[in-house]
Length: 108
Image 1 (cartoon, rainbow, N blue to C red):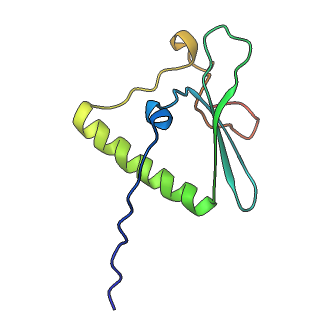
Image 2: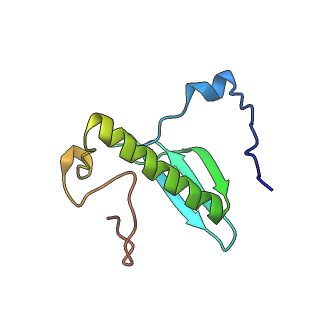
């Protein structure tokens, strides 16, 4: 028996269609959930505020990772390699925004 993929009609509201800009994400997890808190931080600002929180299962997070990786490869094929610069003002080792903490608690 062949399983046919279900077609889903997805609608987006006017507010959601505007989108939210984020240059900072904080990721936490439990045994059953991955939590992504998206924020934006401005240079010199001492604090920021979470603009959106997404909570998903680890399975869905893994699927998101694979889909994002696939889309970034397609983007780079079309527009060229995405360069990753250091933190503010291009200073290496002083990153703000998206990064992966190392075991010492510092962002890579």
